[in-house]
Length: 511
Ligand code: NG6
Ligand code: CA
Image (tube, rainbow, N blue to C red; front, side):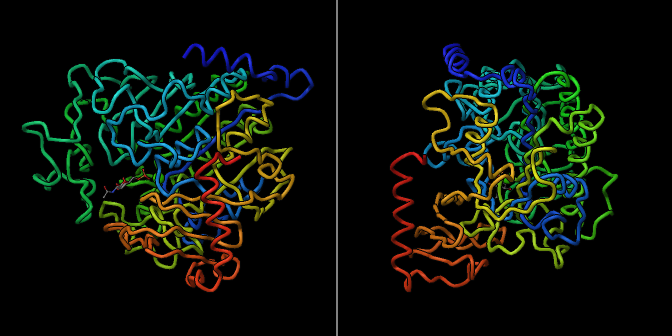
């Protein structure tokens, strides 16, 4: 561990201070990641049943990408890849993590946070985590400092939800221990069995005063704040979160971090809980959107963005802060709770023009909003159609800092900084996309090839078409953005070419 730090520091020849020496101040960097926010969910991406004025302002001050991809169609692998620069499908144990998963990114790994730290930045992770905590699965003692936490992988400060709001434990973890810990209510967590005498959504539906689970989705185990979850927990007392306050807590900690670090460069990995289930936004958003709770959660996401922009402005940091705004994976309507997202969606298309959604191998799984703004550096209000992928954040940000990475760091990441900053429109030659069942597809901006697989046609009760098929699929996205015409048989050469790219990436690193 110590070795990793020393190595990183000695190899990084151009720390933030050097950048300051040639007259340019190293910018702060905020990587703002929404949860399950779709390509079509923002008004700057064409949504008209919900307005997102703060995100739209951010887009107006920078570059809005129309062809950007998350690495995977679910959270854990997507986030793993963002923070390591390695395709998650290369690593076992990177699928949707339980709330008591051990740390998936191990301390030996040189992370994005390590890179910023070794360049003299203050670093923080705030909000949704979903990459495990503690040394080993299911062995955490939630009543003591955790044996391993974000401080071990480069984050100076962290205030996080262990997994998702629909998974126990329903408490925030601050710097490796439960925030506002309540000694009168020791915490126990299990994903195997309930604790004797504790109610569950299944046995005590009368206690579900805030949200009820959808039929056939599970989410009917321990009850916290009148909402049943995945997994069992006991205790927590006053440390338990209230879903309606999650966005406020995250925004408050994020603004505090900015304030504390106003005079030095900082990197903040800021992940909202919005718009993941259970969607239960603050009262001030209630009744404000025709799409109900999901629309209100999008408004709350936009509010969070507004809080950050306001804080930066107040502290005169706007021009010196690079913000990347994106989502971890595509959208879903019914993901486990009876929040009427399906009934109220109306003409709104969460995936925009794309087929499928969260979990799927169709574009809806990984096509995400992606906005890069650094006032004075990014052209104002540019729309870029260049093909880009989250896998490149590591190398691109390394290039921004002038950081030299240790040999094995960010193995699949390529420097796309000039494109990300809107100075060029050079596309990535191809992007690799991972669906929930690990089906891979590859797209070069025109053609998309999907590997054969035998998975289910629909992602359980969500109604989302997975796109899994036992035979190869090929789509021409220029002519058929909605992936309707499988033209693999008529274009064997394209199929072979794209299979070749995928085989090569599978065998070697993507450099
Ligand atoms: C799924 C959950 C879903 C959501 C997802 C993780 C079921 C049936 N569905 O397993 O509700 O929690 O995991 O979402 O349990 S993600 O955006 O964090 O990847
Ligand atoms: Ca997600």
